[in-house]
Amino acid sequence: MQSEIELYRPQDLAEALTLLNQLGLDGKLLGGGTNIVSELRDGHHTGKSLIDLSRVKELRGINLQDGYIVIGGGTTITDLIDHPLICTHAGILLESARLFANPLVRNRATVAGNLTDASPAADTAPPLLALNAEVQLMSQSETRWLKLEDFITGVRKTLLQPGELMSAIRWPVPSDRSAGAYTKVGLRKADAISVLSVAVLLEIDATGMCKQAGIALGAVAPLPFRVHVAETLLIGKELKPELIAEASHLAAEACRPIDDIRGTAAYRKRITAVIVRRLLTKILEALK
Ligand SMILES: Cc1cc2nc3c(=O)[nH]c(=O)nc-3n(C[C@H](O)[C@H](O)[C@H](O)COP(=O)(O)OP(=O)(O)OC[C@H]3O[C@@H](n4cnc5c(N)ncnc54)[C@H](O)[C@@H]3O)c2cc1C
Image 1 (spheres, rainbow, N blue to C red):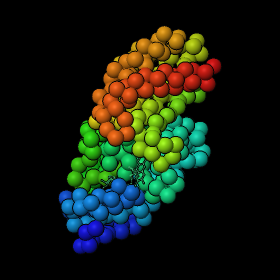
Image 2 (image 1 turned 90 degrees about the horizontal axis):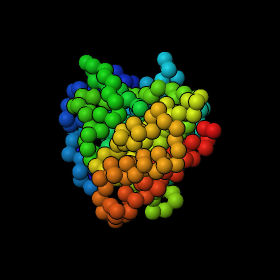
Image 3 (image 1 turned 180 degrees about the vertical axis):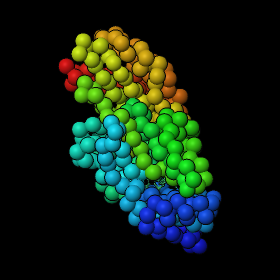
């Protein structure tokens, strides 16, 4: 562990942004620290300062605003679990939060830290992608919203600029005729890094046709991503088993997995098709 790192503990958002601006590339943001602390231990953090965001109240909270669910970037995974707005409007995110790490990590880990770390296996990414989420990036001089889909650009790469922090995440409140599901395949039932993960969100209209579809995959490519080709295939149609099978096949074809200690590329591709088919079928049943 580096001992010469200076720790700053801003009390509010304005102070955090000022520090970020003043410290420049030397100032590294600290959310829950569940990734950074191991980076420090491994000597991967080269900055001189940490800006601890845990006291910044403006970054916490879950609210309904102008047709969006808005969560602060510093909201922890535990905060998501059993929150009434998440339970009612984002069951898909709730499922991923429940499968995330273990209670100790969930108490510290933040949603902004998870998305900014940009691991291909980040558990909040597929559900938020399927929900069509946007992220709010804030600096002292500017606030901008970006689609989450555009924000993550590669393995541990994002469009976050020096001087910016992720202040919030939002997504449009899904319609009453929609439902979703999330599945993570790990090497054990709890506290496992995803071998692959799948989030599916469907909206079925009153005539039984698919109005909206969100299918997002994790840990099967350098970044979590949406399978637009499969979503487009489903929209405007009745979801018959053959169509579901075709969409599942397209999802598997879109994967660019690797072989690693958790699974082979071939396994990941094959199981992706199985899980996408299962989730589409399950959601369809739930919406009947
Ligand atoms: C034992 C263990 C198990 C884990 N299991 C899982 C799991 O099941 N699923 C999973 O997805 N992850 C898992 N992780 C990884 C980690 O817990 C998550 O990625 C977590 O969400 C990171 O959030 P954090 O707040 O702790 O981030 P930190 O470690 O504080 O920061 C991570 C990165 O995000 C940046 N950052 C933090 N907050 C902000 C902000 N507001 N704006 C901009 N940048 C910011 C930091 O500068 C840093 O680059 C696990 C980690 C451990 C140690």
